[in-house]
Length: 494
Length: 118
Image (tube, rainbow over all chains, first blue to last red; front, side, top):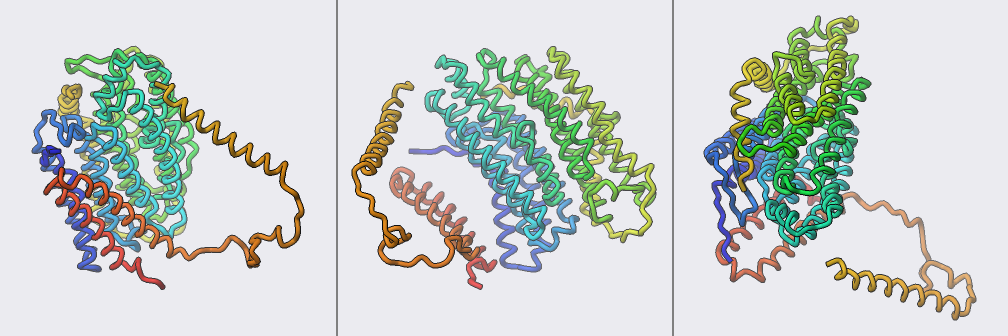
């Protein structure tokens, strides 16, 4: 038995795992002094991994018995995951409550999670897919409950774990059923072909896909498995809430996109029902995210509901992408998914970064902590306003470009109902974000003076990066759109 | 292909039926003469003391975790030993990496004081 392994393809993921191990070892050897070493080590690891990733070349390649692949879209998603991880490492450095807990392990775990998400994006085999999803989930449970003496953080970790364990069991059932009806292959494109050729009763495939959808809906935080999102975001350390809302979801979206491309060929009999299921999930996510979000008095919960609504938008792109396919390149649905994900990375991380800073300065995340913030911390208030308006989809930010592309794709593909719900919830979501702006700019600041603590430089660097992405791609989106089109062009090769 | 599973279904039904028949027939036939000693928890004379809900020390949990890791390692080693000749030097290196990671975990837990009984 000979297994051919192209180590170059695996090198970014292995680098991340190696970097995490090095950080753990450094922590054991240097003990206290490791505090100053772990962040540079992690950033070097991420930089090396990104460099190795970009030197792979844009063409489709696969290895390890065709279970691990890389192509343009995979590289795109991985770059997003790594960039998100980088920004989150900077944020974690400036998050005060965390400083009482061992930080090197925290950084190492974040690198391991990034590696697991990277494996998720690249898996072409059912077994590797499941193992990498579990790997990412288990590391995330630990990270969400990292501040273990803090009741809220422990609750966040436990809730995340309970939702994750049960939905992952359901998803495993779906995988088993898919494995069975496709006649015992685990390679995803081969399964897709077998599902069409074996002439299986559509009911089986719908049940199997429904079960898999439960697991993926948990991973991306879409309705119906959205219940963990607000509680986990509120309780988890703020950088981890940001990590779960961006990197983890991006990996989940990439998996969903691949499963749809490989397991649901155009001629598949269950295209209709599956479109219905996803449309329901998209509409319900958008409506629930915006309407319930309006009632929130805690900024982290508010951002959690906004994240649910944004996933609804991404799902529109995926629905269009699976139904209207032109193999030539103008694949609007998938292009819009990539653009949305890239824009969402910057604006959502930016919002979380500012909320993190304000939380450090004022000591809380409740809405009343934001009263009159504009007169006391004008820069932070202005930056938060920019990111929130970007999330609402106001030009000239990348949020507008992202929403525009998704809605244009939906209208072009005749999904009028989805587009209407998207536009209406967009309008409502403006109110959701404007509520925070009103509190910051129009309410009177409270009497008592709050202690002003200096904001560490890494946090400013993170915010600067997010602001650059949000505004630059909002004003000049050409390169992003071209890159997204370039990445989608080869998504069909197997 | 679903008829293959009929055997499983019949087995389940037969085994449930067997248990039901055994219990019901024993209940019909046996004499009933309860006494105080007979109805105690341990019929052999051991007296039950205290509540059944005893709190275990949470430290057992850490040891249990460390144990599970190495238990799983043994399972992998068995599978590896079976195909050792086929995998050759590649398998040896793979296993060395795997064992190194687990060993490192043990060293880490040791240095962090997880194995200390306080």
